[in-house]
Length: 240
Image (cartoon, rainbow, N blue to C red):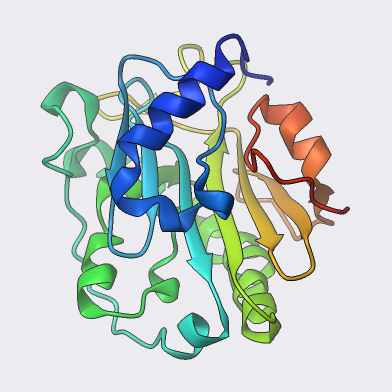
């Protein structure tokens, strides 16, 4: 499952430049160190940032920041207006018809329930923020034991809680299943990293993208880095 880390430091510098308009979503204003490919594109939204893959036509990861205040203010009505993101080249983006009759949900990486303004809510329905997700997983274990649990923690936290969510393709993107004429790739696993700045503690939820998935014990930050090959918190040495 591990990604190749060659050139990670140079890639991280490139990513930081791409995310100049939304570095607030990353701890220490440092995006994850990940080997960038030519079709990886940084997208800034009002309430989250996306590193998008033109190969998988999904995020590589999505970063956001939660807090007591943001959770308390996240009561926007869902727009439910999904759309293809025109900032991405047509050949690199998912289309609505790719998900139609696919058997998969359009699974948010930055959840709609985290959004605090009408515009942020609308932006969360960009397909650049989606992966094909097993419907029972999306509406069940992921929604309750991961997304809701993360909001509950942030609602009690002393300060900022940095959250990074994304897909894992097995054995890799090219050999994973896909949906639609546009070949939007289906992840085998989803992760959500939670970093509590005040306590300097981090953990990650790791779940199979399957209808049968139930809640599971979080893994350590070190284990997430080992499984993905991505240094999500450069410059940070979080406690387990």
